[in-house]
Each structure stands twice: as C-alpha cells, then as structure tokens.
Length: 114
Length: 112
Image (cartoon, rainbow over all chains, first blue to last red; front, side, top):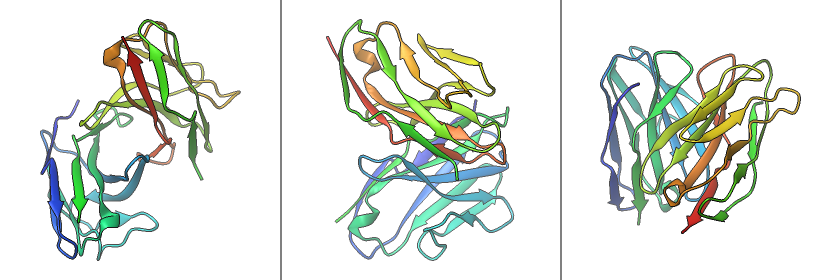
C-alpha cells in the first residue's frame, strides 16, 4: 500500500484568492489523480498528473482554474485559483497501488470559501 | 460512459443488524469493482474489491460479489457495529485505465 500525506487538511479562504494543496507519496508512482468531493456528493475526477508532462483534465475542469504541478514521482500540487464559494469542497489526491488495480487516497483537504 | 448507481441513503440500523447496500454499474468490457469507506473527517479507504465475474471481495466482515449477469456488486455485512458508521462508496475502474467512477455514496449510521 501507499502512504499519502496531503496538506493542508483544511482551510478557510476568501473569495478571489488561491490555495495550493500538496500531496506527498512515500513511494514513486507514475500517475497521481486529483478528485473533488462537493458537499453531500460523490467524488469527481479533476485531472490525472503524470511526471514530466502536462496534466490531463476531465470535462468541466480547466488548467487555468486548477493548475497542477508534478515535479517528481512522489509529489504533486493542485491549485484552486480565483476561488468562489462554489469551490467549497473536499479535494483528494490518489495514487495507484502496486497491483495497478487498487487506488489509495490522501486524507483530503476540506476547503471552505467565504 | 461508465456509471455506478448506489441505493439512496441515509441508512440507519441498530447494532448487530444485517446490512445490504445495493450497487449496480454500467460499463463496457470487464471493469474492476470496489467498495470504499469514508469515516467522519477522513479520506477514503479501500474496503474490498473484485476484479472479475463471480469474485467475492471481503474485509472486516463485509462482503460483495461481482455479478456480471446482474451488473451488481452489493455490499453486505451480517452484524454491523457502531464503528461501521461511515459513508460507503461503490466504484469501478474500467479496463481502459485507472480512473475510478464513483457512486453517490451511502451514509450508514449504526445506533447502539
């Protein structure tokens, strides 16, 4: 299994500001994934981040709003830019386990935008 | 595209009651199926999985069987505990990649 450290665990932000969420894995992984969980809803994939290339975004998500960095095989960041109250969600990163089937998740970042 | 449908919640049970949370899916090919659990204030944890038809995943007293004929992966536990109170997500991973498609989640509350 993979151990994923995600921070911050929670934050309260003002409208119009940006927040960068960090995800650190205890082993090298090819792909890292960023999900959003809106209040009372399920998880939606935002993008897939590969080291050395631009992230691949899902429909409805754009790089200008959710820029992602993947500088090495153990680390990634997701920035939520120009925030509005609609961005209030839990953001989670995940990685594949060694079997290629299992996915492991960080503990999430609870974001509230005022 | 792929989709997962879970029974609507919330579900409230008394301790030692039998639990079933229904999950059905739509996917092409032969997806892998998962149940994840999210305890209050925490991230998701993999509870169990099944990678092919008729496989049974099990963990911590929970079980689910991959039924291709009914495209279902229902979660069951014979005797729930207060500590099982959490949100349960059914999910699938398509044969074309690692991305997960999640169901809506089912909030389970177990009362003593």
